[in-house]
Picture 1 (cartoon, rainbow, N blue to C red):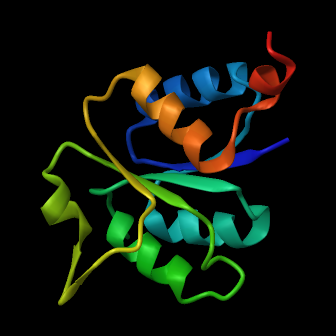
Picture 2: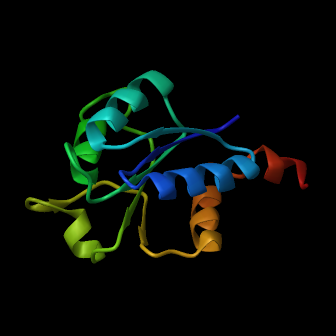
Length: 130
């Protein structure tokens, strides 16, 4: 089963995304900030990370920088979510963060799911065609 790590400090969003993605046949693990997300990524080895940009302790940029510094996590695709503009969220000094996708909040569920499927393929429900 494909695993998705959700990293967001908004509990209700984590809860809703977890339920919807589990219904599609993905295994979900979660963290409420970038520091905990980085630790979880190292132990869980997810197929995809979906992270918010603005969070306490360590934000989405901190998480992406940490992931890209670890050989075992460097290739995990990251989807960044934010209510802020894409250029602000993805700016990283002189360059841009290495993320596979950016979703602006509020987002449409279908757009998020289509992006997940594009990045890691369908969950078990989608693979069974049910």
